[in-house]
Amino acid sequence: MTRVHSWEVRDRAETFYVTEGMCIPQIAALLGISASVVTKWSSVSKWAELRREYRHSLAEIRRNTTRLRQRLVEKALESLDPHLVNAVARMETTAARERAGDAPSFACTPDEGKRDIETPAQAAEALREAVERKLNILLGQPDAVSLKAVKELIAAIRLLESMKTVQPAETPASESSGLSSDTADQIRRKILGLREEG
Image (cartoon, rainbow, N blue to C red):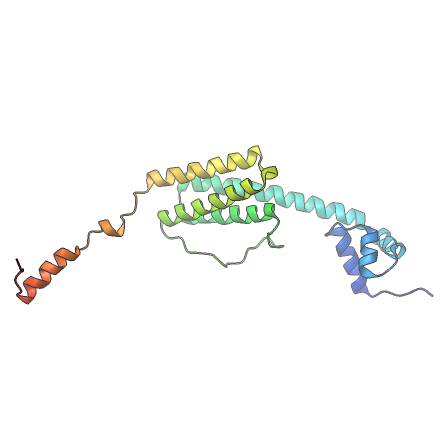
């Protein structure tokens, strides 16, 4: 007697084949059904064609994402807008995660670790951190080093350098225009009518 399988099992088998790239014997073993049943489903629903379409779509998404990254980097280089630089830093972080294999399965990234960038100095710091992360990933995976990756790093480093030369350095707290403790003490003594001990 022929065993009837639920549509959920068939749907999971199709997902494993089309999107996960599993082979029919793996799917059969995983779902506890015969390989001939999975082969029949594959043939009837044209899974091989669906897999080709899926892979083509993923390749197109990667190409478009790369184009978007390139345009965004160029625009950030031209304008030095902190929001654009932040967007570049976040995109590069996501791209690095994808290459490292720990990217989320969706194109969206969670907002954890997100910070507001309101000044050019904050934008430069965010970009510096992104470049540092990318460099560490490349150094940790020598096989991932490519001419393209090196060029991307060089472009990001140049952007960082140009941001440093355009933006004045922030004044450290010790060089602030506020009162020194000695001056404040002298004013306090004058107001209170105290004389300096000499």
